[in-house]
Image (cartoon, rainbow, N blue to C red; front, side):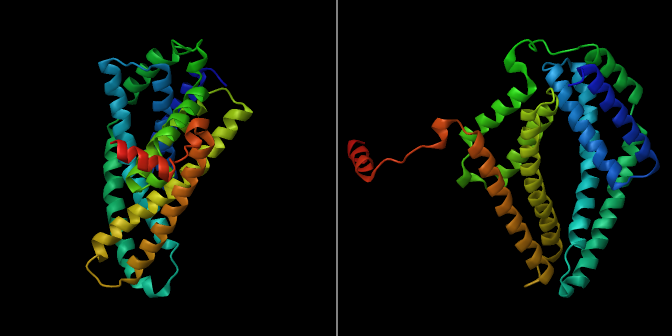
Length: 285
């Protein structure tokens, strides 16, 4: 792994390039790159600086605000792309109506993102990064094996596997998993490159992609519900609901398989009490 200063410097350069591109055009690629770069910066800074001072938290809050603003544009770009993938001819008219709505929303959110980028005080931001992060080669507990970012990410996933069961992967739970797994993946990226690290990242990306695709269809379904929910048997809405349901099943299955791999042995096999044992427990209570 390159040193922490080298890594944060690369991320800072990537961030600067993304911001420069967005000043000229709010393109889907630049918006996506900005968001992922900020996510990686946040994870690395959190690893190096687990405890931040008030001024430092304020700077990170500025980054997070920009990431969320870019996220609104990104969501609309993805929804439009999903809509284009629906080829059912009977939905063409409704698809045009929904596409126009998405484009209008996208234009409004892109304008707000451009305004935020224009007022971003990058010199102050990068001055803090260099002073507080790049100057700090490793985290205070880096000598401790438990501080290894890959070990931390793996332990966090194992802990999650003891708390979440495959029967409890409803939408709300999947949303939580999506956010937590993103953090684990970006944390693992900080670790030294190895076969274990690459395998972990590949597993996480595969599951994240499945959850992300479900989330994207969920977002499109919510938008379509607001527009067509009062119409009986709207063909477009029926198809979007069907695709959303299928993606939910795929995401839940992917998460369940991953958690099964990382669940501690004791958590993998928890035999149920026999009927006689249950009857005895009920009688005693």
